[in-house]
Image 1 (cartoon, rainbow, N blue to C red):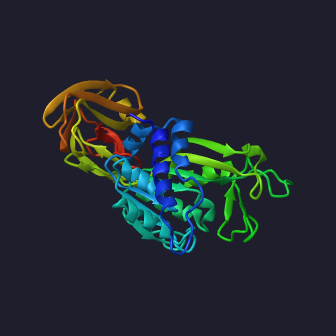
Image 2 (image 1 turned 30 degrees about the vertical axis):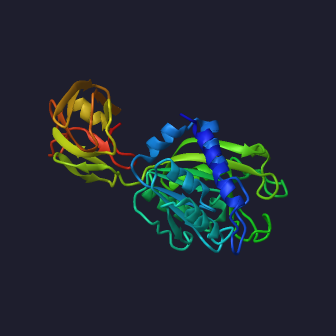
Image 3 (image 1 turned 60 degrees about the vertical axis):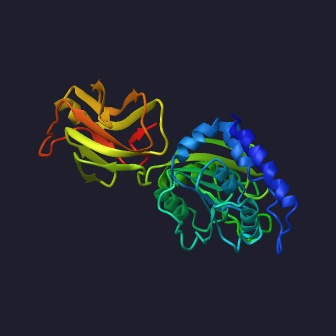
Length: 372
């Protein structure tokens, strides 16, 4: 199978051939190689086609700041259902390019003209994967947009310009969580440029907006030598949301109410239905849960067993506090909705809490119960 790097390069050549023989009525094609970002995802942090498809899962994808839609069309070619989002007033050709390519390719992507700075209403509520490449410094309200995305998408591939030095190189703010606000014509004579963050500032911004950094890299001049106007450094971050709603999972019996907006306790027996987009041979059930210290003090051994569609799986004994994964493999799970049931040897009551407590499960990130 071709690598993500190779697939993106081949698709770029295909799109370029289409652009070379297609004239836009009132603008020019976006001049930069958008799909280089997908090639770098493979080259720089070893995220290949398989891992990318795993992050997407069976959910749709959104390309924020789509330009001519190169990345949106590429992800569609990999089997994803895609929404392409941009603001016509700041798009290079007022979104004529993405519409022309959709016609030429016979594509089914959704094209959405949105001003996320004023109304960050994305077309859907749940995405498996989002891209926002070269967009953040064009936003007046980057925190609002990033937080909105964190509620809607499980993963985000983000790139933006960063800096450590002021334009006169008199102040080094690289180690501080800061941003430089460029003047309206200071950067590339482009009044749509606004905030250039330090690397530290960018990391704090994405964390506070609801994201966890999985991997990152930079391109261009050394970050220590970068400034907002002349010496260009780009940061690329692969992020995982802590706020997105869990998709592909329906809770059954044995779950207590949501605590603090992020976790649920189970009872001794609990169940769920898990979406399985395609037949899996073999298939692995993965269940992430937490054992607080107070629970382990009451119940030193947590023996957990499971079944999928009535097929019993192994029992595993967990004895330490902290996060754990129950994992078991079975020969086949057909496509559709799988019935998953769990059972503990015993439940506990802690302090004044009268509930029957099994294990604690967090829901502020990817689905805690998956079949892969």
